[in-house]
Figure 1 (spheres, rainbow, N blue to C red):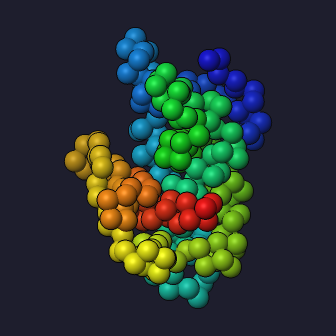
Figure 2: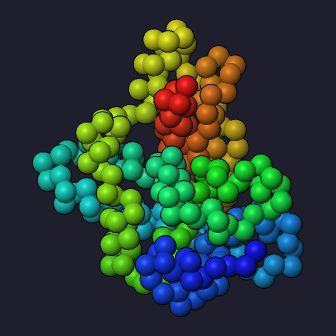
Length: 231
C-alpha cells in the first residue's frame, strides 16, 4: 500500500517532514511478522511516547478547565476521555485505519476497524507529532481532535466508573456480577500491556486493553457498556 502523505497532512493539519516517522506510527506489529525484511519498526514505541504526551495534555486541560473539581473527578474525566473506545472513535473519524500497515491475517479479520488497534494508533501518531512538532502543536491537536467532547461526556455522566456502571446493569438485567480475566499480556516487565475480558458467567462480553490490569478492566467494562447501547 502506497503511503498517502498528502492526505495525511490534510488530516493532521501539518506538513510531514519525516515520512518514515509517520509510516512507523501506522505500522502494526503484525505487519513485521509477515515482512521479516521490513527495515522499519512497529508503532509500539511511538504509542508508549504518545500515551505519556496524552496523559500530560489531558491532565493539564482538565486541571485548568475545572478549577473546582477534586482529584478524583479529574481522574474519572481523564479516564473517560483517553480510554480505548474514546481514542478509537477519534481514529475512525480521522480515517487512521486507511493508513495502517497490517498483516494479511489482521487485515482479513477487520484490523483496520479494531478498537484497540485504532486507539493505539491514535497514541502512536501523537507520539510522532510530538517528535516532529513539539508539545505546543500537540496541545492544539489534542484539544481540537479529542478534548472537544469533554463537556458532552460530563453532561451525560459518561465519566463515572465504567466497572461500577456495568456491574449495576448486569445485576439488574441478569442477576450476575461481572468477572474479569487477563486474556493476554505482552511487553517488558516494566512496560506491559494487558488484554482483559469481562464475563457474565462463562460468556465473554467484551475485551479491553491497558498498560495496567486496572485500566484494561475499565476499558473492557466501557466496551461492554457500549455493547449494551447497541442492542
